[in-house]
Length: 304
Image (tube, rainbow, N blue to C red; front, side, top):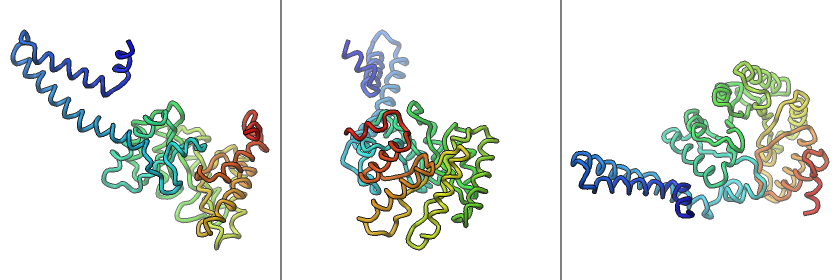
């Protein structure tokens, strides 16, 4: 019974068992010769496909459990999830030539190995995002399209709407917004477009664009005010929070990022693109959850 169960639940064994049955038909002398030749052709074609596709996938699955790390976080996908990541951002770059196949491979590899982890599909290649969504398992959450803006990438809102996905909506058009009036104008335009296409407002996650402190120190409070405006409108917000500390000494960055995330959460920030291996940052987020009473029994974290 256990052997049968393992074979029915394992695609590779099931594939080989099926091919074995095909070969047995080809060897059966009671079957007409032309039919036996057809079975031989099916057997060889299936075996070729098995080695080209499934064996390659098995190597990929093994690679997913290797010690290969993400260059930005310094952690494997598993380590990022264990550290508290809710979504994983799958950034394949522009991927102009093989983007569709690459995104499909990445989505299937991560979700098959990590219990259908929710993913943000991060590329400028629209067809690659669509390809990723076509194989995406939604059991743990909708896919995120990363990202749209109010300018040349506004059609990514259409893409998200057509595929029942979440979209990160950058409050910019051609460059960084000059002030919050411009940010909110972009926010309104994207919100209206999404709702006209049938999206729920909460499926647009608005990014005010976090600014580098060095050289733009006087603009930081505007970003916090924008997050508060999103919150008062009942909208979700997000962003690359660590942008603020770019160019700072390595030992200073966790201090700056932690201070900013606390200020942002008190203004209503609902999510952020962060490095989960930053222990100070993750502890700050958990502590803010206690003060904001964001989760039931949030203070239980203090007992750990």
